[in-house]
Length: 458
Image (cartoon, rainbow, N blue to C red; front, top):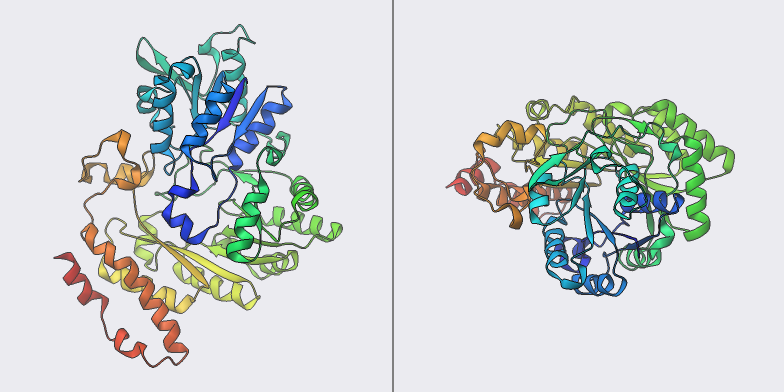
């Protein structure tokens, strides 16, 4: 086996995911697999999602890949490090060349090289993986220094080559190599736990916005879009091959270009496509016309980002959106018969009780069908991390922790947010129950979040 593409996410270890059971195939390495195969590279893929690290190791030992490329993010970092150390310390795999890529390696490449990785791919993976694999397999005669977008050790010191220019026309990429994994496993899990299957699909790379907490480690602050025709072609191919009940568009801002949405809508109408799908977007990139087109195409749910109900905190995040517009668009989207979701982030620098109260009120007023809450954590390389790096109060071992474990001096203690998150959730849910005339919630609603905060901070 020449090249093995893989990741180190094992669903059985993820207690939170086991509660919701909404796994998605690893689109990133499916794109790279398709690209390498198109270039006639002997490529194989091990999807670890429904497997275990023990089975993963057995597969590697059995197939003895010459090159193994591992996708790495915050969720998989610790398992990736374990896998790299095992590969380097196992006699049978010591000659295997280890490549790491993904969002967590860009600003941590030196640390990953020290753990035993041979090469780090920084940024977009297709072209770099192809060139680097060919070099390692002895199919090219050029110098390793000529390969753009990689880092490696030279005389035990990290070296980073010139950055690779991003793929300008992503229409040139083949469809993801879904045939190399068992899509049926994903569909069965969705059917069993949610009554309907779904398949993820990507139409764009990068995001043109500037939110301080968001990582742009792979695609940068760019915006490149596949043509509506190719997206419609892929949807028809997926329907023909797998017949899913719905689609999930993974793009950061699905409706960023109204012209593009118009084009996709035209393709759907011309081909008679109407499929249920969910997407994410920003409030200012929605209007009646776009909502009408999305509804006609089959859109069943739109996630509209807000992150906070306080305009002051939204401005701190450099979100560049009006919270009242977000609320308005959530309400308007629901009026079109489309479900809504929104995202909330607590614990952002300078957040006060007043900001949290405004967030609770925003959720009550907007009344999205679903919302998720995250306590802010500073990913290395983001504006948020740059802002708080001198306020970090945790002393972490890099190899045994992730950026999610980084804590910094906030307005309130970390323990406070352990209680604040469920309190926000319960306050909003109680409001919903009260609106449905559930009498038992009246006592609950007498609690004041400010009073709870004074208790929790102690």
